[in-house]
Amino acid sequence: MDYGFYKNGRGVPCCNNTDCRPADDFVDVVINGQLMVRLLIDGTWYTIARNFVVAENASDGRAHWCGEMIMSLGGERRPAPICVILPPRDS
Image 1 (cartoon, helix red, strand yellow):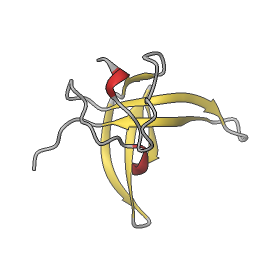
Image 2: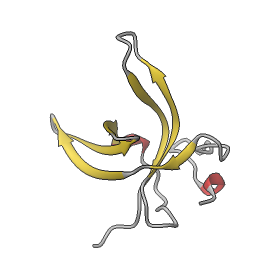
Image 3: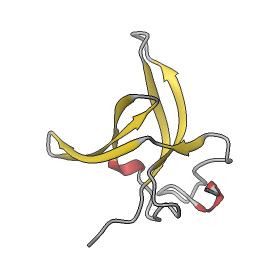
């Protein structure tokens, strides 16, 4: 998928085609009243705030995320998202 088309809420490109990739799966969730998206990345589920979701749908029908994996202070791997691109949804 060509990621160059996608921009975040501030109009900044999501990636340079090197830091975006498909997620293995996704699900919408509500946590403490906040809309979130859970992405399955390399066998681990990560919860990401919906404000990272871009307005445009993924052209290939899959969920994608743009960003990098970083190590937290506790030594756990966690995503540092720039954008999340979701597939079209049935109305």
